[in-house]
Amino acid sequence: MAKALGSEAERATSKRIGALQALWPFTRPYLALMVAALMALTLTACVSLVLPLAVRRVVDGFGTDEAALLDQYFGAALAVAALLAVGTGLRYYLVTRLGERVVADIRRAVFDRTISMGPEFFERVMTGEVLSRITTDTTLILSVIGSSASIALRNALILIGGLVLMLLTSAKLTALVLLIVPAVIVPIIVLGRRLRVLSRENQDQIAASSGNASEALLSVQTVQAFTNETPSRAKFAGFTEAAFDAARKRIGTRAVMTVIVIFLVFTGVVGVLWIGARDVRADIMTAGELVQFLIYAIMVAGGVAALSEIWGELQRAAGATERLVELLTAEDTVKDPAKPAQIDRLTGAVQFDDVTFNYPARPDVAALDGVSIDVAPGETIALVGPSGAGKTTIIQLLLRFYDPTSGAIRLDGHDLRDMARQDFRQSIALVPQDPVIFAASARENIRFGRPDATDAEVEEAAKAAAAHDFLTKLPDGYDSYVGERGVMLSGGQKQRIAIARAILRDAPILLLDEATSALDAESEALVQTAVDRLSRDRTTLVVAHRLATVKKADRIAVFDDGKIVAMGTHDALVAQGGLYARLAKLQFTAGIAAE
Ligand code: ADP
Image 1: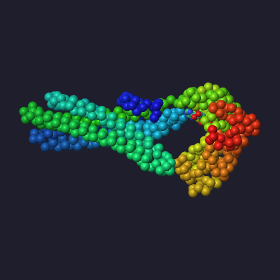
Image 2: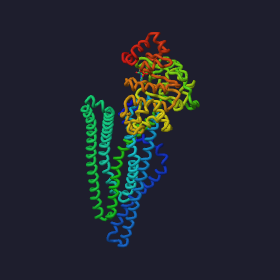
Image 3: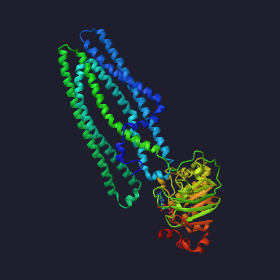
Image 4: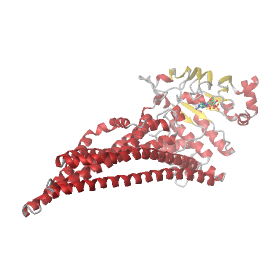
């Protein structure tokens, strides 16, 4: 699990309500909305507090007041009801809207940040975890801003107001009620703590079950091919049942708590009513006053119950906020300079100057060790060597996904660290080993290389990539949907789309990670023609697995164990003997497997 983001236990202890402060920057822009909501809320709370006063007058008026006065009372009650209704509706709309708005902003902020994070971040944090934060954690926050906070505020107002009015109505009865309060509060606190633990357990089991399900579903064909459906079902069932068990325990505790609280509250109310009734008989208080007192007491009791319930929810939301804030403030190891160098279109001169690099996850092993290469604009360099020698690392560093531990990488003489990443990446086209295809149409997939390209340009690129023929044969031609990760296309077709995308990008530098999976001869010939067209006149660094590719390169850099052990043309290197000659004899692909 994500080390840097803290273990579940650490999170639990740090679930402080204070963490909710972090929501302030997101709510501040909507101050006006908040003030309006607060006004509506105060209005309804005040109206609720006034109602019992009116009830008392009605009750005490029975028999003594004139009929006309009674009509007036009921007329006023109607007006108050209207006020209460409108105020409540308004509060609901304003508060919920505020919550939805803030959550939408948080979701966007988290995604905006995550999409530009470097690979080191994703080595620590699972993509699924980020997704769950964007969806589940924000939902908890929504429930707080969009309702709990306002319910809490409303109940706090009613609690305080109700207590004051109770005191004013009858100090003696209030004192009696306050005696019962601890008896109600203690079970709420004790059981509330247990509820919180159980609720977290429940959430964790749900997270585990969805993580497990998404993993199985993403590789559903492998699961089926190995006839592993039954174990997969059992595993998922295990998580789901554990979640259910935690939920059942939570609900049980909650039910017990409800029984205790209701019983105690009603016992208290009945007791107070009993004493109150005797006072009424003794003419110490009026019947109306007793009714008024009772209503306040019930309102206060309801307020206490609501607050105790919301307390747990606020704590859960505080935990969720913490997790989101961790994402929002996660530091990227690679940063753009404060004043990036102004660069136009690069010519494509690439220089690695004595570059040594250790992956952050393996600080003691050098993935590259004193590598120097100078690539002239337009030149094609093949990177060859056994698996794990550091070829892909060269591509990763050239895109500045990581910074070298020592040495420098330059494009047209500018150190990568002196330019904005967006600026120089514009001049690079990448064809990765596993072509990445998005769940969209073929046309959109190609256009990914240059979003402002016209349809004609897209088709031209597809023709150059030898993809036009198969694309026009698809049911909807270029507009055919290709499925998630391009499942509706063959390996060679996906590669040609990836190449068309790179052609469309029309960048001076091309980074190519040749596919290791053997394509059929026809596909391979087509892909090869496409690549040849693409690399013409461009600086090309190709991680080569095929002899044919290597032979066409201007120069070949032979990697072994993070170092360049030989450099030259195919013929020269074969004449030298050594690692390259051995690899060439084994035709590369086989050689790599043998290494
Ligand atoms: P090649 O492309 O030549 O097969 P790579 O450049 O991918 O090799 O890998 C070079 C070395 O760096 C290997 O030993 C590999 O295990 C290691 N490596 C690659 N990626 C990472 C990473 N993200 N974290 C730690 N080590 C890595």
